[in-house]
Length: 210
Length: 211
Image 1 (tube, one colour):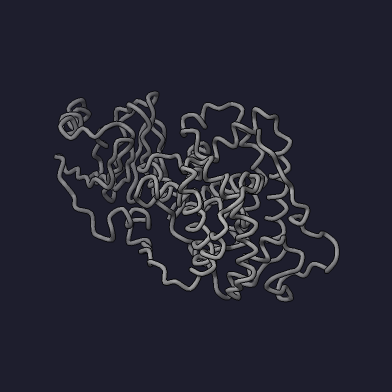
Image 2: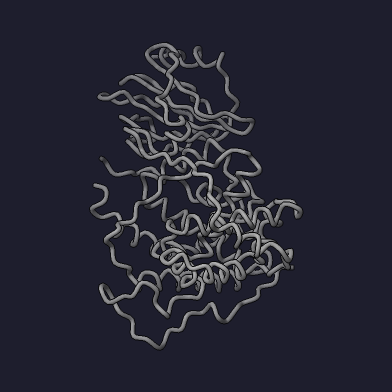
């Protein structure tokens, strides 16, 4: 049976520093989650201590994750090493307006596992180019974090059967046909998150593409 | 550019995010996402679910040297991966499948041409070039077929498909898509049916003779 260990430190403080909008937003706000703060320090300052903190948080979780996702136990640490080095090397692609750190690392881990299994790179979409002049939008970053927290809670509220199906789907144990026919798969729980992501993408891309 | 109206269904986006979509379909999804922010955001949402599952995974003990080994490699030079941007009508993932080269078209008759992009045991993808007014070949569906328009447009009984639109074909879809007047229609077509080169030409001519 799957256990869910919830680290209280993930929950961002809602109180404290008043929320600033627009220009006054510092690059790394203190009310972001720990993971977002670490990731932004890696991205902006190439901060090794922040990377070590990310490693300590994610690498032990990645181990069980990649083994469940089909990587032989003997190869798991090799994959973890590749994934964490990719986190360091591609940190500039992390955009907290569009993704939570865990979602970004999930995607890197699944890519790595598939590329190893196929010995061929998986097709990836064109990267969205970040507007270098754009100000960080703390309210959007916090909104993404809040949605991720809601999502995590929603997953915890699922029945055991449903949770097993969701985990199978996202760990790569179901084919697309099986995902389509699994009536227990609560794809609806992610609707609010889709809406938020869309708002941001539309905002980001205004003027970049017409 | 006209707005995209035919999108990728959610279960295929979830499968793409989880990495279980056969390679040729993943190529179509990646190409569509490159042009469609709605579906890009939907994939991001699926990745958020995956991230939540990763967060909820119990920590497992690591070998004692792993952390130090990773930290020691932060300055090591990394192999640069080629990044393929959009080129003309071709989205980045198609350019990557072409390895940055122009498509090498092979004539199929009646002005229709194709370039195979990828083929394995599970799935295959090709570019199709269809002159205006011509019917799209190879349209019996043994499994799933995704057809994304890159240039021009085609129409069938289910509607009109313009640039960026994806038609989802399965066993239930029986149709004769035809390239609309104007530019030749260039499509990215992926299927999980086996490649049948020999059968392609007669079957291509079939709908024309029926007219």
